[in-house]
Image (cartoon, rainbow, N blue to C red; front, side, top):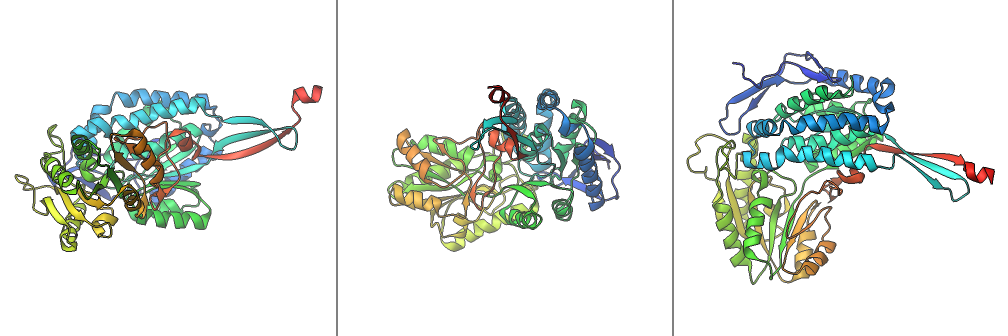
Amino acid sequence: MTTSLDRDALLIGTTWQAPATDSVIEVISPHSEEVVARVPEGSTADIDAAVAAAREAFDHGPWPRMSPDERIEVVQKLSGLYAAKLDEMATVISTEMGSPISFSTLAQAPAPWMQIEAFLGIAREFPWEDVRPGVLGGEVMVRHEPVGVVAAIPPWNVPQFTVLSKVIPALLTGCTVVVKPAPETPLDTYLLADLLIEAGVPEGVVSIVAGGREVGEHLVRHPGIDKVAFTGSTAAGRKIGAICGEQLKRCSLELGGKSAAIVLDDADLTSVVEGMKFLGVMNSGQACVAQTRILVSRDRHDEVAEALAEGIGSMVVGDPLDPATEIGPMVAKRQQERVSSYIEIGQQEGARLLTGGTDRPDGLDTGWYVRPTVFAGVDNSMRIAREEIFGPVLSVIAYDDVDDAVRIANDSDYGLAGTVWTADRDAGLDVARRVRTGTYGVNTYTMDFAAPFGGFKASGVGREFGPEGLSQYTELKAVYLGESAAGAEG
């Protein structure tokens, strides 16, 4: 049976081409557990063809040799086309991976478009060539040149958000790109591919080949790749980093998180609960920046934990395409089983289950659902407090004083995000300065595309967004100019 979302070709070098094999990816609805689309499963031969096209386009094609303004013009056209497809993109993402449509229309679709606009503004002001006085006399020009052929490997949880955080800066800097989407979420990249072609991205510049781990590793190891940009698990990131290290290949790795929300005693409880209903279980908990450790003073532990349990436990679980749904299914059966196993581990470790658990949500006979879950009395040494669960599971942890709260927040292998909740902004800022994470929020959390995003420790290497994110796709070249013309005349 065919569906309206089926595809039969791969984007190789910005043109549609037949795949090298007959292998197919069946995209399964996490809600109905039925096939919603079939698309080609890329092979290593398809990757070879894509890298060859990207290599030819970078080494001999016009794209890297265009002026920044010429590339900006193409990406600006892409932005206009993308803006007209936001509703369709949101529906596709919710269909393929189960994100609640309310979250997809709020973030999954518009945030990638906002990235495009932000990077366009950054590129217009970026110092592509900077002439400075030399210490030894004369002048030095510092040039930002494209890093080369980029392998972009996004995950399934926020597929467009993560793919465009790589593709757009790569394009603006003059790189060529081979994208390897996750096999769970290939459909949104087909919509992106159509827009790239319509925007006039030249032949060879972008390829999109969906596939599994073998295909991804082949891409990472490929000698034609100059840089790997990856978002995903820390375990996979370590392996990619090791391969890139062996080959002296550039890489940026945006990995896992186990972020802590520190609730100070003067915090407004209603704001905390409403904040955690979004920040703690956004995208049904499938978010690397989710605030899953809730740190509360011993005096307020029970009060905050019970309020969180009431708020999180009352969230609507159901069909991701229903606008009323707040918690959708996990992306796959294996993810449902993983999250459920952590809930069992938490109970075995002695944490107190306040709401949720491993029982299937009422009225949902099919679908890979997990009830939103809150544990109280969690010790930071427990596995549910140390390991990334990637589901709607929160752990409430007691601290003795602010110093102890900061210590617990920092007692983690990860350092991606975090928040502090307080009526005293200066006190919040003091905490923000002491917690070792790449991003932080006082009474809120967001990713502002003008600022760098990334993590400390096992949360990754490198940064995305802001001028810092654009520069990740450039190499620096120093050109020694000697005396300036004015100096020589004088």
